[in-house]
Each structure stands twice: as structure tokens, then as C-alpha cells.
Image 1 (tube, each protein chain N blue to C red):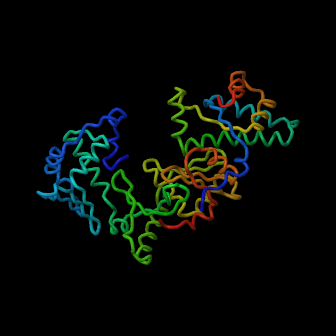
Image 2 (cartoon, chains in turn blue, brown):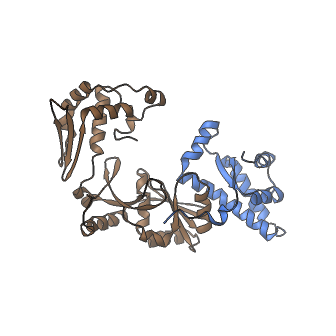
Image 3 (cartoon, each protein chain N blue to C red):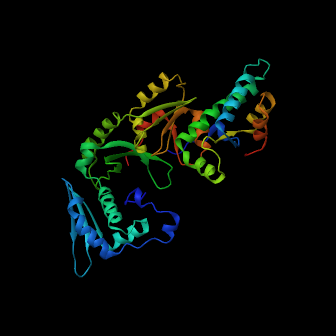
Length: 114
Length: 253
């Protein structure tokens, strides 16, 4: 038995975006609002669903392995509620194109790896 | 953490320039605290050897741990133990507490958990651990012990694991089990995979292709295959992801 291949989520590069808790709430709210729009293309909707999943997974990842994010927070001085939300290019593109984001959050997401 | 306890976790400066534990001072402390180091089943003896130096001996049933006092002093120095009577006393108590687990203790109180199968941290297997105060220590069967003699202890440990109270938390599509004070016990949830699946069902999560993500000594995560892959694949930490049905097939270490 060995570690399982990363599968469908692993074939794409996921870039971390370090977001505080209020920013993650803003992102989730904006994504849900966009998903409520019937004009959103089904493929884009899947990407947006994956963004919602990642917001949960980011919190779960920090619950299981808190040390790595804690080291980054220690080095940067970021608050304890800042977590890496890892998004693919397709997911980020869907968010930026289809979601009504606060300016500050949009600016943060536009900076890769920020 | 060293065998001398969390109190010996020195800061960087102290690790770079540790205060030396003097052998004569350690001998004085051992002589003074020796009676308090022993327990009902634990014998602790200071063996004085004029030509070869003194040694500390700990015995519990069939298990024996023996260390030259000079080596113990060096180990304490490296671990950053404070060179004071109190520091050395605490380190000695911790060292005795880290003694090997005897067969009788494992049979009477062992708990089954998952642990790394090798140094590469690529696989996991079952291991019996015993709680000793704030510690959980592995039981290492004596090499050559017949499998039939190990089975009752392992079976009883599996039974006790099923009784360990764990915290259950749902984070979106991910179910998480953790232990509030002894992280190593989180994997006890996996002794009863069907019950694990029941909790996932009760939480309203999808039960198709459920996988578990295991890092020994960390909370256990459970989710669908793609979510589990996303969880584990984007972490720099070692973990093993496997279908829930395969947990029952994991080997004993």
C-alpha cells in the first residue's frame, strides 16, 4: 500500500492564496451568488463548486496538518486565521470572471501565490 | 520531544551551546531520587562499577533498559536538560517513564493505533500502544514471538480502541476525527471502518468511494476520493490515502 496518486485534483497546479477568515467568507458568498445565476456555463459552475470545496478542504487541511501554514504565518506575521486556499487556474479564472468580489479580495486573488 | 520530556526542549541558543550535565552531579541526583523512580512493577537500580563507571538499570517484567550514566549525562546535555537538581530529577523521571512497554502491560491496557511502517513514511500499519501518564508508548513484541502469542494482545487492543472517545467534526465534505489530548489515538476510529462509514452517513456526506487520509499522530480525515486527493495532495506533510475498505487489511507492525 502506498500513498494514493493525487488523482483528478492533482493533475492541475493549485496555487495558494492566503486569505483571512472574513475574506474566505466573502469568497464563499460571492461564489454561491454566482452559482445561483442560471446563465453560468455548466463547466464554469463545476469550477465554482470546486472553489467551495477547496474553502472547506483548506480548513480541514489546517486541522490535520497545522504546522506548515503556522510556519508561514510566523514568518510573515499574518494573523492566525489566515489559511492557504489553493485554486487551479480554471477555478481562479471562473471566480474572477463570474463572481462579484470586493475590490480588496479581487486584488489579493489577482496576485498569484499571494 | 526527547525521552527527557517536553521540559528539556531547549531553545536554539541553548541547543547550540548546551550547559553540560556533570556526571558527578548526575550521580548525586540519581542516588537521592532512586527510590522515587521505582514503581509497583518497576525496579530501578544504580549499578556501581569501579572500573567501568556507573550504570542505571530499569526492569519491568521481561523488559530491561540499561544505560551508562556517562552516556545518560551526555544525552541529557544534548537534549538541553537544565544542569540543576530539579532539571535532572525531572529528566530522570521522564527517562524511566519512556522505558519499554512490557508484554503484561500491553496485554492489560494496550490500544491499537496506526503508525508509520517505515522511515520513508510511505505506508502505515497497526501497532499496540500503552498510555503511561501523558505518554503513549509503543509495544514492541520480542523478536521471534510466535504470532499466536501476539494475537490475544492485539485483539484486546483493537477492542479497547473501539472504546476511545474521539472528537468528530465535519468541514464541508470532509469528516475529521481527533483526540483532544493524545493525538496518536485519533486513528483508533479506524478499527471499526463500518462504524466510521456510519458516522459519515449520519453526517450527510456522500458515501461513494470514501477514502481515509491517515497521518499517524494527526487527526484522521475521511472524504470522497477526489476531495481526499485534493486534501492530501496539496499538503507537504506525509500521509497515506486509501479506500476505507482497505483499512481492515493493514498489517501489524
